[in-house]
Length: 171
Image (cartoon, helix red, strand yellow):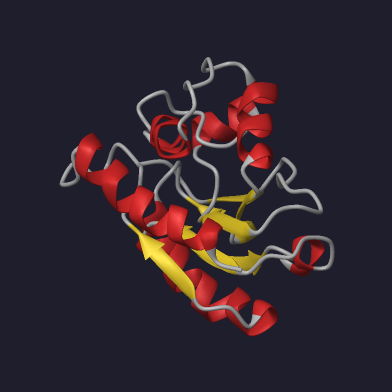
């Protein structure tokens, strides 16, 4: 197994002044860090799920601008709970020595009224480090990671649809 490395996030959050829902992952995978964008592992189902839930065509794997635009069109911000940490490869289970993201950077600009965490690790870290800053409880959804094989794509999409559309509809 790879040794621990101290790694910084490496790329910017996605948000604008119309973002109402903040989706948070834990920390970028090795492939995401290499691609310098979210959910860079082609086996991760995040972009397929989001496109389906939002009624859009899934953007091409390398079309960062289209992915960013799709989220912003629907009032969704995207970031990760962790700014930097020690980690082995892409393993969330190996994360230690966390420096949390400055989530106020988003909440100062955007009227975020709901937080959704992509997976249990993001949810646990959010509760510990960021919920005291935002004052918003997070809805923790099943991870879109390929490691979460217990959730089929249709089941995963339906659960995300239920939560995300309700969050977007909240006034």
